[in-house]
Length: 258
Image (cartoon, rainbow, N blue to C red; front, side):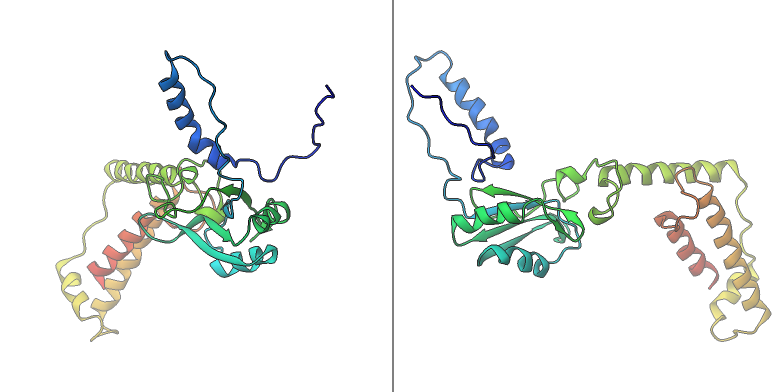
C-alpha cells in the first residue's frame, strides 16, 4: 500500500481555534458518557465548518469602524452580513466582529488573503466560524469586553490601554495612597466665612477683593492636589494627569470657591 502523501501547507478550511476550544468541553462530556459502556464504532460526524461562510475576526482596534472592515473584507467577495462585537454594558466596539459571506469559497479566500494582514496598524486574525447566533456579539469579560482584555499587563493603546481589571486595581491603589497621604499631612486651611460668602458673587463682582481672594484660594487648593497627584508612585514623570480623583477634587474646589 503506497504511503499517504502529506501536504506541505495547512488546510484553510480546517476547524478554527475558536471552534475547537468551544467544543473541547463537549468532547470530554461525550467521553464520560461512553465510559463503562461497550465501545461501538460511531459514524463520523459531519464537519460543521465544511461549508462555513462566516468568519470570526479578532484583534481589532476599538476604534476601527464598520466601514473600514467592510471596505477591506469586501475585496474577497460580496458580504452578506457584518456584526460588530460590542461591550456588553456600554454597547461600544470591543475588538472583534463576525463577517458573513454568501459562499464558502469567499470565506476561504478571505482567510488566505486577509488573515494575518494589518488593519489600523494591527495584525488581524480570521477563523472560520460555524455561524453567528444572537448574543455572541457581546463581550463575555467581567467588565463587559472580551476576556483577553481583562488582565492584559502590557499597554495596548488600540484596545483601551492596560487590562480593565489591572486599571481598576491601580485606581484602587491610587485612591488608598491618596487617603494615606492626607492622613500623614496637615490638611489645607478652610476658606474664611467672608471668602465663602463672597464666592457666590464672583460673577457679579469680578474685580472685587473678595473675588480675587476666592480665585487665589481655588488655585492654591488645585496646586496642592496636583502636587499630591504627581507624588503618587503610580504616576509617570511628564505624563498627563488623568486621575479621576484629581479631577474630582478640582471640581469640588470650583464649587467651593467659584
